[in-house]
Length: 397
Image 1: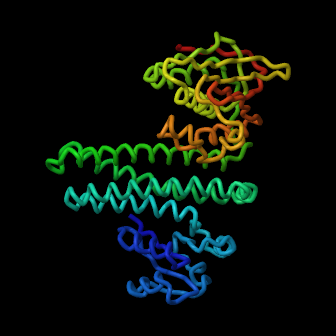
Image 2: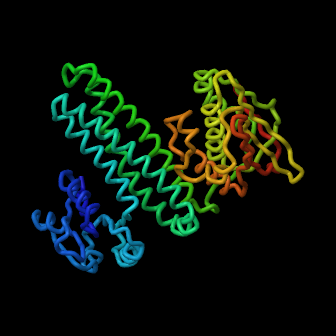
Image 3: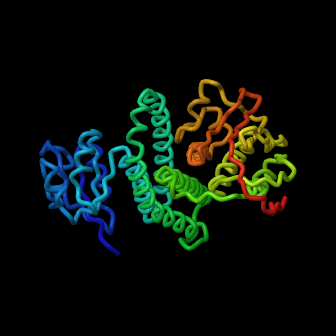
């Protein structure tokens, strides 16, 4: 296994925390730490571990051995300078991504430590971590509201952020798989007899890992979509009936569990020009939301309508919680969820509609919304009809 050579720029509180975490990990070597303040806590810790300390970044950027640079100063000009001067083989993670990685790496290390501790320590630390995560989620929601006016600026740097997010997220897949594997070993009895209360906590750890794994999957999906070159996306003539049937079949189990009836149109025998997999993801995300946010025994409807401009309008309608008008312009933002949505569905991650919006953009369309609180919502989008004759739909439902 190749050893990752890492440098940290910014040795304040955040840089110190990341350095402490990396020093505990195997397979990584921290070679450089940089800060203009030689008395910063991170610089003192680095010197204690014989790590090269610098007041300037130039030598770090020239070092071809460095695989990854953590920039934790929080200053955009520093991040831009590193990105322009670094070696081609060196990756850079900014302060926002570093904060996310630190929290997730902290969880991984904390889980490993708990496996070596006694059951009492395990229970206490899990509870503490849960409280910290809840606090972090609350703070994140406040930050999203406070920084709403900065959306335009954030859009300008979104492409670079997406690249770094993809790198960081890929690195997290293996650690979470390991955490889940350790949890399964404990639950299967390989660690000996465990008190019932501790077993409940381990189950919650496994469930939380499953949710985070799903979130990582959605993050990668969104990042991949944002990095796509539209000219490279393969568009074909696809039977619309088959796409609808696949989406309904995929979510039939969830609908049955919530006693939701799905109404969908009779075969229309129409081909649409699209990337089938992407449109299936888009339609499935809209349908899944409609199921989750509808009351039990309600009906969700998929409708298809021919438009005069040789397009097809596909819509998904529910009679669920609806969306307040003041939030309707924000629900397609990454990670945004209304308080009502969180109350109804705690396991959502706020990425489904962002993914749907990105797919719609790739297909030169937009997702339209009609909604009233307490009465339900209709999400719709348009696809161009294909010129070649329709193929068999292959409907199975």
